[in-house]
Length: 403
Ligand code: NAD
Image 1 (cartoon, rainbow, N blue to C red):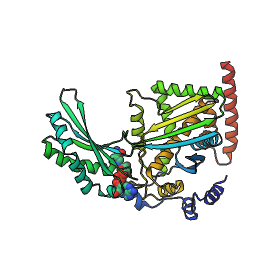
Image 2 (cartoon, rainbow, N blue to C red):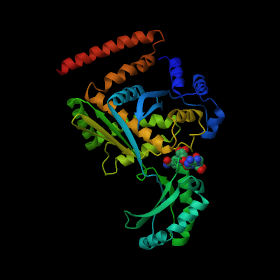
Image 3 (cartoon, rainbow, N blue to C red):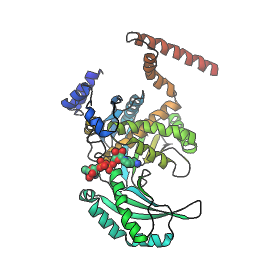
Image 4 (tube, protein in one colour):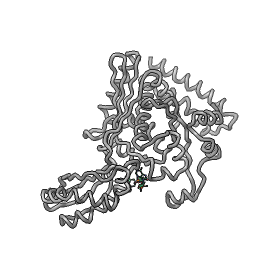
């Protein structure tokens, strides 16, 4: 479709309002005043293309997925693979747990057993006061600070470090600032009560108490392809070198949604990678198994996002993208991210185990190479055609050489 046709189509689907289409057509956000509020020492906006991935049916719901990303072929691969799944399978998602984690570190405690006993004895009162004085907004929405746990960490010098984990349900916020405030509030009462010294307070991005799962089931595969994808999955499970690239491919599907919706992609990246290394070895964040014509893919990781907070409500393009997804909660957004990440992974594994990644990627990336080489607008299609033919000849030569 032409860009104009895409707008008409998205408006007809109800994914964009006429006003939202007009905003995008006229170049999106230009308000420098807003940029000045978001960050410091502002000199402009850095623009990344915003596209839509199509064909996604997640938990039985048709979705148009907004993706802000600079890398060629991600949106095409997501849409193409989602079509394959739409025609032959399902994508299901679920959330496991609701609590984010704040950490209060006491670098050296004189008597850990005494410290633990005192904090746990005061737990109910600590939770009551922090919910009353800091997290009342979350409590009113059905969330708030729900638990405290104490961890003991042995230091290399033989002394003992204590860490209090503070668990809170942030409702529809990512909750980073809220949980940091909660931890800093608790510092005073904990120091007074125990006589120990708090060193620092900050959330953890390894949120293993709030996980998101996606499951893709695909039927009617031929055995050869199903088994090849299973082998590719095993490679990424066992070898950290492959796992890193596998997980980059999964995040190819997730990060663009995070950026489009104004979410903190560094936080999600940190959480996903840390969770991928939870066994002590960095592993694939996805797993694919093939059995009797059915390929099953599984993703599980923390994807802590907000539909409020940060710039989600302030950046008009982020708001537009959230509207496009028609979601009711942050948990729903994180489940969509997991689904797209897993489908993106499937697309990559299918390509890698059949034609190779270059064929699809370079077919599209040639546009960038042509422009980078200095081709003028009328020259671009001509150069692309020649380059593609040369590239294909090259490939044929290589294949012949490889026998
Ligand atoms: P925030 O500070 O903007 O606070 C969210 C606000 O939304 C709260 O005041 C809350 O009262 C309000 N709210 C309205 N409706 C709500 C609802 N339905 N559910 C929950 N809250 C609701 O945002 P935040 O989520 O506390 O923090 C996110 C920001 O923190 C991001 O910009 C992130 O980049 C940043 N951050 C991240 C890290 C990290 O990941 N390590 C550390 C510090 C800051």
